[in-house]
Length: 180
Ligand SMILES: [Zn+2]
Image (tube, rainbow, N blue to C red; front, side, top):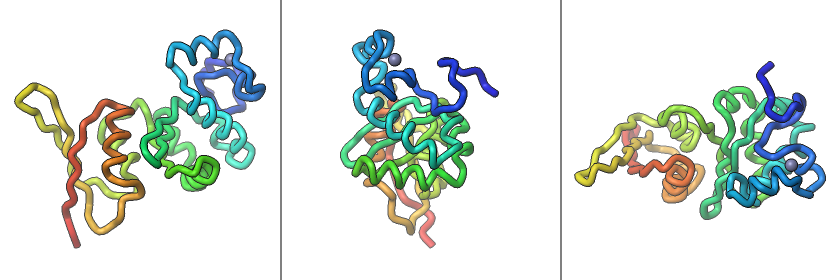
C-alpha cells in the first residue's frame, strides 16, 4: 500500500478531496486550489466522472489523477507514473467511457515519466521509431518524433503537438518513417 494524501484508500486519488467531488460543493481547501489555478473546472468534471466509473473499473482505486488537459477536440487524462500499467486491460474501456461522457477524443498519459514514455502514451497506438532533441540557434530545443507509418493517428497530429506543449512544454516535430 502506498501512502495516501487524503487518508482514503479505496477511491481514485485526485488533488481534490472526495467530499468535494461527491457533494459538488467545494471546501475552503479545494476552493483555494481552484482559485490558485492548481485545479481547473475541467479537472473537477473529469475527477467526478472517474469517481463514477470506479465501480465498473476497480483498478481506478489505485490511480492518481493529476489533471485533464483539453485541446481542440481532444482530452488528455494525466495520471501518475505506473498507473497505465495498473489500469491494464481497462485502459481502452476507460478511454472509451470518457469519450462517451465528454464527447472528446481521449488519450491517457502518465505525468512524471521520461520524455519517451510520455510520448509513447501520447501517440499510442502508433509506434515511435526514433526520438531526438534538436537544438535551435536561439538555444531552445525541439523534440523530433519519428512515427512508424501506415496507421492513422488516433488524434490529429497538430492537436497532439499542442497537448505535448501544454502538458510538458515540449515542442514537437513529427515525421513518419519506416513505411512497409
Ligand atoms: Zn475539498
